[in-house]
Image (tube, rainbow over all chains, first blue to last red; front, side, top):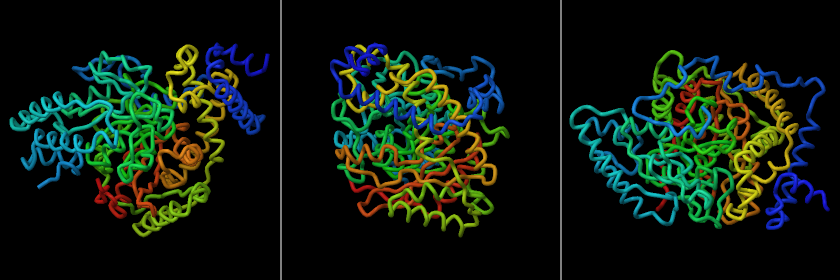
Length: 84
Length: 456
C-alpha cells in the first residue's frame, strides 16, 4: 500500500483516490511542500499561541467596541450560516 | 441628464432626490443593458427582472413622497452567489448547491433591502469562491468586458464584470485571498476589502472563516465609502467618532505618509511596474510623503495564508469531497484537497506564523499611514490559458491582507498594451478605512480611469 493510499484512507478519501488518483497524489505533495516551507521559517523563539493571542482579528474588533449580543437591524432575519 | 448605465450609486441617489432620474427608469435601462449583454459576459447566474421592477416601483413612490429609505433607495445592485437572498438559490456556482434555496437574507442583503436598494440578481463566482474560471460547471465562467477572451479575475468575477460593463453600479463580493480586489483590478473598478470583521458575514457561504471578508465592488471610491457607511453601521469597529466614511475623502493627499513596498513592485511585469511607479510619482506630486517599507517574504505570507485556507476549507467540504468529489470543478477540487493532508500541527504552526506576520504588518504601518503595493503582478491573462492562470495564482499581493486582516482597496491606474486594466492596491491600519478611502479618493481623482468604458 503506497503512502498516498494510506494518507487518503486516513482522510476518508478512498473513493476520491479511486476516481482522481493524480489529484490526490498532487494534494499530498502540495501539503508536504507547504509544511516544509513553514518548518524552514519557524523560529525557536516563536512562542506557542496563547488564548489571548490566537483570535487576533476578533480580539481587535472586541477592543474597538462592542455591540450587544444578538443586536440585529429591525426587520431582518439572519440565516446564521456564518460565524459572527 | 444622468446616464443610468454609467452613473455611480451616489450619483443615482442624488438624481432620484433631484428628480433627474427615477428608479423605475434606471432599473429598466439596466435590465435592457443586461438583456443586451447576457449571455455573453456571463456575469449573472440568475436575474430578478420582475422583483427588481416591483422594488423600483415601490422605491419611486417613496422618493415621490419624500421618504426614501436611504441615499441608495432604488439603486440597483447584485450579489455574488455565495451571499443569501431570502427565497432565492445560493448556488455558489456549483452543481452541489443547485437545489439550495436561502431561507433568509444574509445580513448584508438585509441591510441593503432595508435601504431600499434593488436586487437585480445573483452573480457568477469561481465555485465556492475558490476554484478558477471553470468550464465544467452548470454555469459558464464570466468574461472580461474589456476583452471577452480574457479572464475577469475572481472569485467575485460576476461582480467585477457587471460593474465594469455598465450592468450594475455596484455589487457585493467576498474576499478570502483577494477575491474582491482581483476582479476589481482585472475589470477596472474599485474593490474594497474592509478590516476583518467590520462587515457582517451571516448568511454568506464560508470558504475559510478566519480569512473571509465581505465588501463592495463599485465605480468610485466615494461609492465604496457610501456602502461602507451603510453596511458597517453599528458594527464593532465602525468609525469610533460616529462620522460618515465619506466625510473626509475629499481632504486630499497632502501629508499622508505612504509606504511603498518596492520588493513587491520589483516582482511585477514591466507595464504593471511602470503604472505603479507613475502612481507613486502622482501621489508624491500631490503632497503625499513617500517612504520605503519592508514586509515579510511574499511567498511565505502566501503559504501561511494557503495552509489556513486549505485547512478551514477542508473542514467545510470534507464530506462532499469524500462522497461526491466528481461534482466539483477540477480546479476547485485541486485547491481544496490539500487540506485533507494538513495536520492540526500544520494549522497551529500557520496560526503562530500568522501572528508574526501581523506584527510585521503592524510594524510597517507604524511609520506610515498607508501601504502601496501591487494588486496583480501581471496583466490579466486569457481565460483559457491554464498555464498562465496557474502561474498568476500566486503572483499577487492581496492574500497578505487577508492573513493579517488589514483593510485594502484596489483601484484602476491605467491599461496595458492589450487594453486591459492595471490596478494598484492601498492598505491601511485596522479600522482606519476613513484614511484609506481618503488616500484612494485622492489618487482616483488624479489618475481617474473611471471615464474609460469597455467597447461592448
